[in-house]
View 1 (cartoon, rainbow, N blue to C red):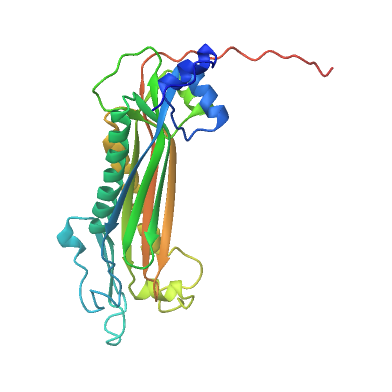
View 2: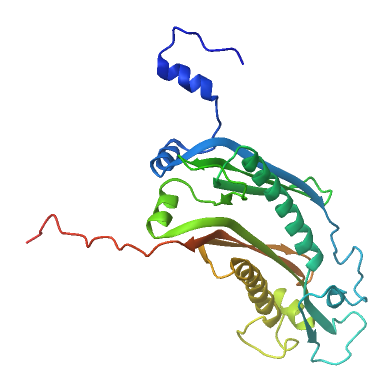
Length: 298
């Protein structure tokens, strides 16, 4: 890089000598980070593309084949038809089962992208990465999912460099400042995914198609037990996995989303994702002063 012109002000020459940096922060978040003593040093990112197969009713497994979820070591629950043998097409059994191969592929793709982002931050000598944004998008209909993480690497002003892995957080700006004010420090972002396939049996099929009645064994309003069980379990699995990664720390800013894909005759595929910030207490909470009234309406 060429030296800056000598007729520039001293402050400008000093900035040129230090080199440029990039940041993904907004103006207000950037200012709040500087106020906390966090100096942005660069925009960092990580990317990974993963491929896994889709198992559908018309795909690898046919209706007459029992799902092999039990052999994968995942959670499974079976449902039995209460009507006896009606016909060869009658769904005499059903099953909710965890799709462990999808969870493993998702975890590998996300973690690979995360590690690459943190490696970039470490190369810059950063102490942490703030304002992390992660996206996942399918590439056409090829069964390929791309994972992209990006954030702003920051250094603690006047702090020595360290060989330790930087910390990371989805937070930035005032939200991050409030966490510090409450006596907590960010450790890392955490995220988990749970996937459950609903293989409907006769009662679920009739109820989901609105034709329950006598076939469902009751008349009136009542729960679709197999669907309720699957929706509850997919959330529980995501929460349990995040809890297992905290190791005594706390989860801040938790965000849970559940996506659903419908197949024919009551069959569903559910995916729950839970993300948040792993934080650790480093000082006692300093309570804010009690608010004082400034105007009396009397």
